[in-house]
Length: 266
Image 1 (cartoon, rainbow, N blue to C red):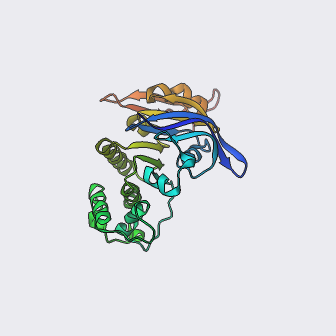
Image 2 (cartoon, one colour):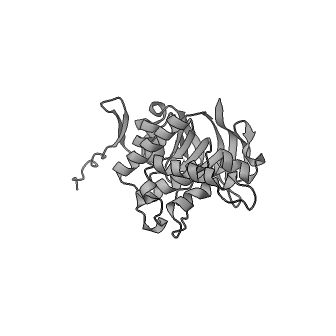
Image 3 (cartoon, rainbow, N blue to C red):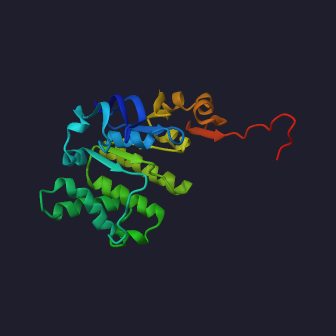
């Protein structure tokens, strides 16, 4: 079954079109990585998927048009984590995660025991239990990223849209974050759509890759089909080799261009 389907989607800001004619299907329980050079329209496309930006074309979540859903319905179906979320520093980790329960509460209702239990479980899965009473402003970058994911998971949505979930993380913490997201995907059956700058991570974690350039789809398919040396040269202006690691994982390795003829190397 398809969790998300876009057909000929166009979107942008203030009359300026940023993404054009994007079509893609994301099966239930799969992971789609959206990649592309800076300014390609990756975050704009993710916001359009989340129903946060108006656009033309067709965007369906579980066969329902995104723009026909109420804000509460969207929040129950879609968990969205922006690249640079505004975090209220005075809130504790628990209070912030509880914000994810808001779509499930009635008007003027407060969180109950069931909501607190869901949040406690989420914090445990994200190794945040020991930080539950800590203020957000006291957390490290990696801890804040996990707190943002906790709020998203507390929504219990089937589709997670994650804009650069590894932003600001070193390679070890970034790898741990992606392993965590992949484990949650496998255990919960959630569908993941994420933007990723790191092409090696995109190749190793995603089932499908969508390559955007100047707001349009340049290529789409399995990582090995999309992330080729030719594509990186054409769309990124980058020299790179595509290597295979010991267990068959793809690695995108930048290659320093040879010095120009007649010019000594620096």
